[in-house]
Length: 375
Image (cartoon, rainbow, N blue to C red):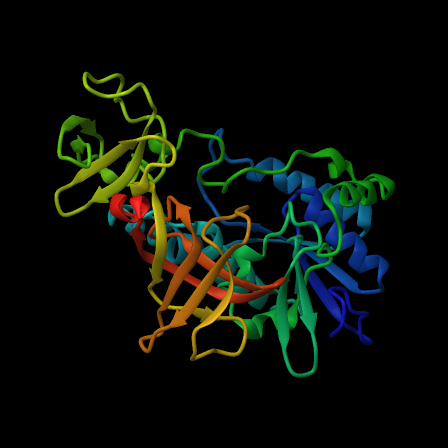
C-alpha cells in the first residue's frame, strides 16, 4: 500500500477543494510541493446569504490562498444539487422524527460526487480535500483508514462514499496533527494559518438550530410524558428534539420527582409524544444493540457474524461490538457495553483497527430495560 500522498505521474493534475480554511489550504500547499499540477475549486453549497453563513468571507480567503500559492481558482455552485440530494433528505428525516447527519450525505453526494466529476471536467486526474483521514492505495484496492491524529479523524463522515471514487482522491493531511498543519501554513505565508475551525454546516452555522428548522418544518405540538405516562409539559414538534437532549424541554421541577435533569428518551411518532426521563444514565437512554437500514461496505462484504469496533456518533471512542450481517442487507450490531442515546437517523460506522469497514443508517435501537439492568 502507498502513502496518502503518492507522487504524481507526468502531466497529473489535481483539483483541491479550497474551502477558505487552513486544512484545505495546506492540502493544496503539500500537493504543490510534491510536484502536482494544482488547481483550486471553491464550492458554494448553500444559496442563502445571511449573517450566519460565512461563504462570502470563505471565498475571499480561498482567493488569498490561491494567490499566495500561484494556482488557478475555480468557483462553482452546487446549491441546487445540495438542496435536492442532501437538504431534502435532512428535512424528511426530521419530519419522520429522526436525527440525520447531513455531513455524511454532503461528502457522498457533493464533495466526492458532483465536485469530483467537476474536477474531472477541468482535466484533473485526482480530486483532493483537507479531510483528516488516510487512503491506502494498491493496484487491487483502496482502503479508508483513520487519520494519525485521532482527535481530528474524519473517517466517520466518509464511510458512505462509494469505494471506487476513492481511487481518484487524495487526502494529504492524513498523517498530520492540526498544530503541524497550522505551522505548514504559517511558514508558507498563508493568511489563514490561524483561522478558527468552522463549526457545523453552513446552512445552520452558529444560529439557533430550532429557529432554523422552524423556517422549513411546521410546529406540531404534543405531550411530553414520563415513561409511566405522566403528562409533564408540551413539546413544539418531535422534529425539534433529539435523543439524549438535555435542556430546551420547558420542564422544571415537578412534585414527586427528584431535582435530576430531564433527558429525551424516546420520540413516539404514532402518538406525537416526547418521552423524557431523569438522570444522565437512565436505562431508557442506553441500548445494548441496534439495527441499521442497510450497510455500505468499504471492505469485502462479509456474510458471517464478526467482532469489530463501532462508532454511533462522531468523536465517540471505538466501542467493541459483534456485527451480524442480515440477508436483507441490514446489519444487527450488539455492543459489548450498552451505548447511550443511540439515535435513529444517525450512522453506525465499523472499524477493524484503523481501517473503516463501512457503515449504515441506524434504523432502531434496543433499550436496556430496567429488568436487564437489575439482572
